[in-house]
Image 1 (cartoon, chains in turn blue, orange):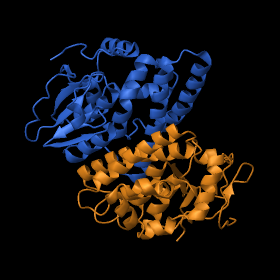
Image 2: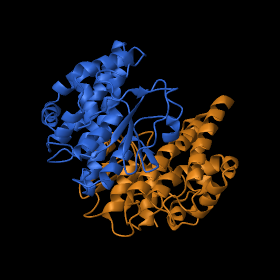
Image 3: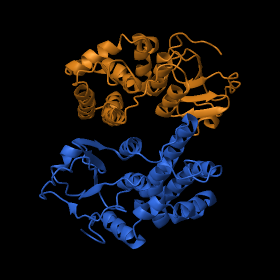
Length: 239
Length: 242
C-alpha cells in the first residue's frame, strides 16, 4: 500500500518529472497534508494504483502551477487531464474506478452527510486557529464554538457507527484526516465526546486508515516545524 | 411561478408557522438572497411546487435556529425533514423530484464544473467586497476579484458550449447565476469586457427559470441601498401575509 508517499518534496529549481505513463494516475501531494490525506484514503480504500509526486509547498516549483493554477495539493494527472481540490478529485476517482462505491447514493443520507461534514470542518478549522491562539478569552470562545459544532457531530454518530452508515465511506474519509490530527493535537475534544471517541477506535481498524497513518512522532515533528514557520517536509523515509 | 416569494419576512417575536402540510415542500428564504436564489432557480427549472416562508435576517425569529442551527437561509422542510445550505438543498431537490436531472452526471465534466464553481468564488467575494468598499483601494481590490471570477467563466465557455453545463442551463449554471445577475447590475462595464460571458449572460436571461426568479431592478436597488447603509429593508414590492 502506497500510503502518503515517501518521495522527496520537489521544490523551485527541481526539474519537472516526465508526465505519467499512459493510464497511470499520478497524485501531486505533500506527505503531511490533510487534504492529500483525504484523497489517499479514497485511493487506499478502493485499492487504486497510483504514483505520488510530492511538492514543497513553501518553495513551489514553477511548473506545478501548470498542474494547478492555485498551486495547492492535492492535484491529479492522468492521460493529460489534471484536476484539483480534494473533495472534487476524491469524488472523481470514486466514480471512475471500479470497486465499492464509497459515496452514499441515497439523496437524503447524502445531504445529511454533507451537512455533518460542514460541521466537522468548522470544528477542525477552529482547532487549527486554537493551536495558534494565546489569548485566554479568545481560546475559551473558540473552544465553546468547537464544542457546539461537535455536539451536532456527536448526535449524528449516536445513530450510526460511521458517517456513511454501517461501513466507512466517502464522508468518513473526508473527515478522518481532521480527526487523526485532532487526536494528536486537541485530544480533549475527542475524549470529551463519547460517540466520537468510539468512532475513532472503530476507524483505527480500517485498512485504508492504517495504510495512510503516519507514526505520531513524524506528524508531531512536521506540525512543530510548520508552526515555527519553517515546515520540514522530508521527514521519515525519503525516496 | 413562485419566483423568490413575496411572503412577509418574519422577525423576532413572531410565531413559528405551523409545519407544512403532508408532502408539501417549504423553503425558508429571503427575497433578495443570492443563495436562496440558487435553490429557487432549481425549483423553477424543474417546476417543483413549494411554499416560501421568508426570514428577516437582521432580526431572526428565535424558532428559526431550531430549523437551521446556523441561522442562515435557505433551509427546506418537508415531512419533518429539514436540510439547509444552498448547494446541499438544491442538489437534494434535483435528485428527489421528477423531471430532467439538472446536475451533470459525467464524472470528469462534473469535476470541471465544481472546480469552476470554486473559481467563481472570486466573483462572489468580489461582489461582497464591492458592496462594502469604502475606499478606492478597496473598490479596486474587489474589481480585481470580480475580473478573476468573470475570466474563469469566460475561459470555461471558450469550448463552443452555450452554457456551463453544455447545450442547456444545468445545475452549475443555476449556482453561478444569482451572483452574476447581481454583478451585471453592479458592474455592467466590467461584464462587457468578457464577450463570451456577456453573451452567456444574455442567453441565460431568456431561460424560463431565470425569468421567473428575476428581480424587479427597482426593488433590488432599494434592497441594496438599505444593505449598504446597514439598515436592511426586506419587505419591498408585493408583500403577502401567510
